[in-house]
Length: 398
Image 1 (cartoon, rainbow, N blue to C red):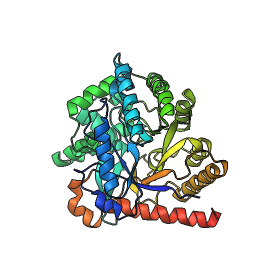
Image 2: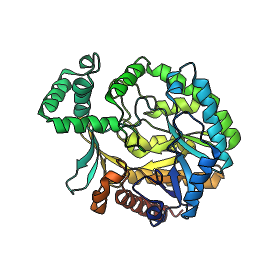
Image 3: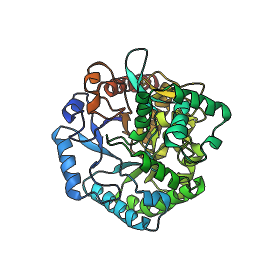
Image 4: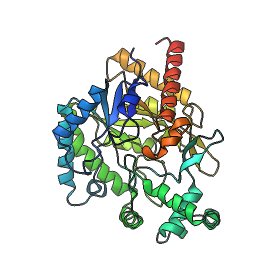
C-alpha cells in the first residue's frame, strides 16, 4: 500500500527557499500557485505550464495547487460574483489540461490566517507563530479601533487587553499591528490598516448563514464542473477555528464541514485536513472528523499546536503539542487502508508538513521566506512525520 505522498509548499522563484533545496529532502511533489495572477483573474495556460515545467526540471511534480484564491465578490455575494465564478472554472480547466487535479482553497473572511506574534521565541531558542486572544483584543480595541468593539469583549478580557497594550512601547505596538496585517502566506506586503478596517466593516454586515449561503452558491456552480474535469477541490479550515474581531467562521468544526460537503455531494467536493487549524480548538474531535469524512480528504496539512488555558496557542514542533498527532496519523493510515481495500479514492494522499520553527541557519535568512515557511523547521517536521507514518505502518502491518 502506498505511503502518503510527501509534498512541500513553495512560493515561486522569489521565495527564499529554492526547489533545489526542497529536492534534497526527498520530496515527491510541490504545492504551489501562480502567485502573481490577481485574485479573480484566470490563470493562463502558459503561466501554469511554465511553472509546472520549472518544477519538473527539478525532478518533482506539481502535486497540489494551494491556492486558487476566491474573489471577495463570491465570498460576500456581490452582483458580479458570477463573472468571477466563470473565471474560477476556466482556471480549473486550464489546470486540468496541464494534468493538475488537486486544488486547495479557502473561504476565510478578511485574511487567510491570524497570528499575533510571528517570531515567538521558544525555550529552545527557535521561534514559532503564536496567537493570543489578549493581544488580538488589544489590536482590535486600541489600534484598529473597531466600532463597538468594547461591547464584544468580556470585562476581564478587555482589562487584560488594555493592560497589555499600555505595557507595549511603540516598537512592540507596531510589531503587533504588522503581525496581524501580514495576513496572507505568499506575500510580504502588509494589508493597509485602513483597508483592513474597511474590509472588516464589510464582513461584519454578513452573518454566518449568509456567508454559508455564499459558499454553497460557489460550490453548486463550481463542483459539477470540477467533477467533469476530474479535479478534486479541498477546502481548508478557518485558521484559527473561532471568531476573531467579530468575524463569523464557517469552516471551523464538524458541523461546518458536514454542511459544505452535504450542500453539494460529489467526489470532487472535499476537505484539506489541517491538524493545526482544526486542532487550535479543543472542542474539535480530529479523529471523528477523519473517520466520518475520511473519503473526502483530498489533501493533508500536518502540524501541531500547544493550547494554553486562556485560549492562546503557539505552533509546537510536529510531534509534540496538544494535537495527538500519533492518533491522527494512525487514523489517516487506516483511511488509506480502507481506500486500498475498496479500490475507491487516492491512496497516496498528498501531505505536507505545515509550517515549521525558525532555527539554525534559517535564522540568518529569516527575512527571505514567509512566516511559518522556513526550510529547516519544515524539513524536521517532514522527517518526524515520515518516521511516524513508517512506525505506525509497521505496527499495523500495512
